[in-house]
Amino acid sequence: MQFEESIKESLIENRHRDPRPIAADVVKPDEGQQAAVLPYALLFRREDHRSKLVHIVISGKVTILKHGPIYCLVRCGPHEGYLHKGMILW
Image (cartoon, rainbow, N blue to C red; front, side):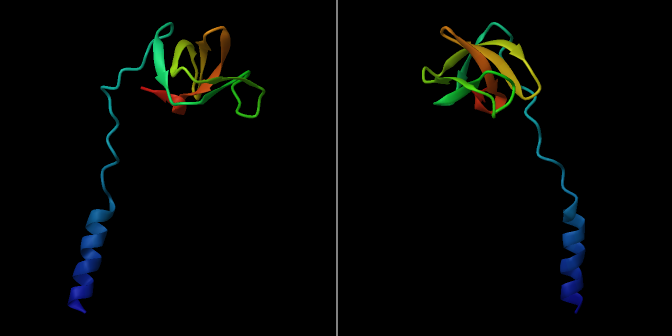
């Protein structure tokens, strides 16, 4: 009984952990700079994954034209489109 109570107390103490630290030293490329992307990243016409597909990036490099909250406007060769920020390797 006492052992179970000590386990419950330790669980309660450790329940409130600090959140995972955010890497503040990550350098994000500015507009006009090149950025590396994951293989076969998809460029869309609008800031929506359901919009028309413009291009599939095979080269692995894009030029960032504009930052948005979820998507970035990028250029890959002659193609311009929106790329999800999760596909960019910061």
